[in-house]
Structures are given as structure tokens and as C-alpha cells.
View 1 (cartoon, rainbow, N blue to C red):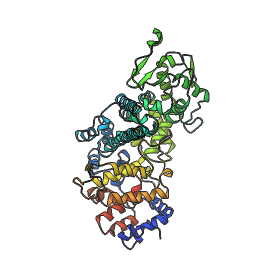
View 2 (view 1 turned 135 degrees about the horizontal axis):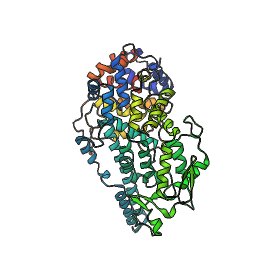
View 3 (view 1 turned 90 degrees about the horizontal axis):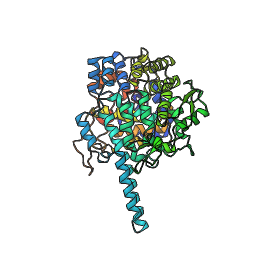
View 4 (view 1 turned 120 degrees about the vertical axis):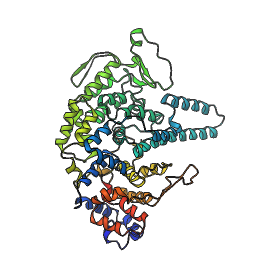
Amino acid sequence: MDAVQHAKQPGTARWLDARYAAWRAAAALALAACLGACAQFPAGANDSTADLHWLNTVTYGADQASLAELRQLGRKAYLDRQLAMPLVDPPELATAIAALPGLQADAAAQLKAAREARERIDMLPDDDSKQQARQALNAQGRELVAETARRHLLRALYSPAQLREQMTWFWMNHFNVYSGKGQVRLLLPDYEERAIRPHALGRFRDLLMATVTAPAMLLYLDNAQSSANRINENYARELMELHTLGVSGGPSGSRYTQQDVQELARVLTGVGVNLRGTPPPRLPPARAALYRSEGVFEFHPGRHDFGVKTLLGQRIEPAGFAEVERAVSILAREPATARFISARLAAYFVADNPPPALVERMAQTFTRTDGDIAQVLRTLFLAPELDRLLASPARKFKDPMVYVVSSMRLAYDGRPVTNLRPVLNWLNQLGEPLYGHVTPDGYPSAESAWASSGQMVRRFEIARAIGSGPAGLFAGDAGKPRGARFPMIGNKLYYDTIEATLGPATRAALAQAESQAEWNTVLLASPEWMQR
């Protein structure tokens, strides 16, 4: 008997408990059953079902308020509103974010505080004291990363600007930095808040420029000390292959060479950081006039290669930082970049292998609008073939972030939690901790990366944790519950829309549920819920 064939179980309690061992023993079969159960779109599916799938794609997951808004406005007006949402958080959410103490200082202040702490540690009299102080300082750095993640999750769960927050997550992966490298963790809050999120729905060139001048990126990809007499090609290579053009000779049609990488690396010399807040360097007047500094970012003309460069066949004259701006414009406006970014967006939102015709239309929009991300998304979400894609057996499989956040949004439906540590732990268990991907390619979005048997077993465990009660989500600092209530997923949203998306096996299992906790867990562990 397959472990997730709910209808064949003698009772849901035994399905969740006695058969839980069978999930572990036959996890591979569980995965096959989970994916196979999605192979037939339920006969009860209708326009309401199509709208639910569309809403689950535009947002992290439908709740009752967003569904009501969609029904009132229609798709086009709803999308217009999402694309026009202000950057400022609504008051209640802003208050919750303001309560995160570590995020109140900017990057320069974080670096200064850490530098002064290290200096105090160096003055301590014995090695044991130094070791303890260093451990405490490292713990502070980890907590800063955790608070950045809490801010990100608060917005993902509760912000009405759901598309902006999804795009912030998308771009944080596309322009990935690893919080565990050096002092990147101290720069991480500013990176997300100032470089990524404000440009998430803007023009791609502006977003690209913000990342090129982001201290977190420059430290992570080793450009901070790249100079004319010691060029580091690492960032230049990733900037072309991962951030803009795609792999040379790949499906985007890019055709750059190693020579182009080297020329771009020359352009980027002198683009770095000033971690200690030192005064501008002493340079000859002509070069001193080219010095640029903003916060921790610094362009140092004394380290720049002022020779003529040729990038992708275009000549770049010596001009200091203006060369960087010219190179960014060249990369952002390449046809290969339009295709590469469009394909990544379509793969993230709707299908691991999106239709080439859809990607091409998105790329045309990208080119026509000079990289207007909002317009590219409009082309995607209003595509005539989108309902067919969202109703197909290969509907987009949720990565861990989308799975956890959508489950939380359904289970608690806007009711704010007071403790996000369990959510952070769930993402860690599922292999997608925020800011924890070591390599610059970021977390994948493809089903193959997240649908292993081990992954499914962990998802079942998290479904039970969410469905069985507060799971510590309402505990204060002392671990005492604060206004916890049991999640009631069987609400109007469920009966109006979700129920019609479920196959017969899942419906039968829900009918056998012996408690609200079991019913919740069955739904959140169902094969249908694993997809958008």
C-alpha cells in the first residue's frame, strides 16, 4: 500500500501516526505517489480554481482577503495594484519590523561596532577571555542574519505587496550573497533593504547597478580589492554568466568570450569598499575628482585600470566609474540578458520548462521597455496560455520558502505570530535557510532540487507541526504562549476554492480525519498542496 494513498487508510489518525513509520521506510514510494496524484486535474475544477492557482502564483499563497480582492477587481486590476504597491510597509507591519533591534543601524555603523569590539577583544588579558568574547561577537553576527531573515519573513507573510516580496526573494537568489563569508553578514541587511527590494519591480539596469555597487556583493565575489595590478576576474565572470547573459553558448544565445570576462574585470578594478570609514585617498587632482564614495561603497581611482576596454564588441573609453555605468548598460540591454532573465522568471513562477513562445514574448517586452521588470511580469501573468500551464499536471512545485510561507498564510490567515524561530528552523530543515546558499548561483527553483524522498518526509513533519497547533509560533522570549489559537484551515477559503483542487484520495483522507489537527495535517501534506 502506498504511504500517501490516503483513501486506503483505515483511519486518518493511523495514517498520521501508525503509518508515519511507513513514510520513512518507503519515502521514495511516497514521493512517487505524491507527484503522481497531481497528474489528473480534479474534475471539479472551474474558473474559481483557475483564479486560485493564479493568485497562488502572484502571491506567496492565497488568503481570504487576497481572494476577495481578486474577485472584486479581476486579474488585470489586481495585478495593477500589486505592481503599484508602495515600498513603505503598512503601520502594523512596520511596527513589527521596527521591533527588531539589530536592524536599526546601517552597514557603516554595524562595521564600526564590530571593529571596535574586535579591538577590545585584542586587548583582553588571556586567551580564554578572548575566545569567549569572539564567540559572543560571532553570535551577534548570526543574530543579525536571523533578524534580517525575520524581517524578510514578516513581509512575506503579512505584506499586502505580495508580488514585491516574492520578487525580493527571487532577486536575492538571483544576485545571491552568502552570509557566512567574512563580513558579508554585517552588510546583508542593507543589501536586501537598499539594493534589492527598492528595485525589485523597477528597471533591471537600475537593479543591476545597485548590486554592482553593493558592498555585500563586492566582498562576497572578491572584487573589493581588485586593482589594475592585481585583477580578480571572479565577479566579472559571475556578473555575465549568472546575473545577466547566462552561460556563453547556452539557451539565452549569449556569445561572450574569456576576453570579454577579462575586459569586464578591468572595468571593475577600483570598485570596492571602505570598511574602516577612512578619509578619501590622496591622489593627483585629475584622479581625485573621479573618487566616489557612498556609505561603505568606494570607487578608488588609484586602483583602477584606465586603459581602453572592449566589451561585447563595444569600445569603452577611460573614464573611471563612468566605465562601470557604461558596462552595466551594455550588459542590461543585451538581447541575451532579456531572454535569460525572462526564462528565469517564467521558470520560478509557472514551470520548470516554460514555453519558449512565452519566454520570447517576455523577452520582447524586456527589450521594448528597456528592462522594465513590472511590464515583463505583466506579460507573464496575463499570458493567454497561463491558465493551461497552471492547470497542467506539471504545475509549479513549491520550493521550501513558498511551501512554508503559503502553509503559514493558509493556517493563520493574517493572524500575526510572535516567534518566527520555528519558521527559520523549518527552512533550515528543508535545506533553504535564508542567505545560506554558499555558491553564487543561489537556490534553485526546479522541482528536481526539492522533491526528493527525504525532502518529502521533512515536509510531512512540518505539515504536522503547523497543523497540530501553535508550534511555538506564539511563544514569547520566555517560551510562554501569547494569544495562541488553533489553526482552522477548513474555512470559507477552503470550501470556496481549495476543495475543488483536491483529488479523490485527499478528499477521502480529509473525510476520515478524527480531529482538526489531523485534518489540517492531511491538507498541508497533500500532493496538491505541494504545488502552486
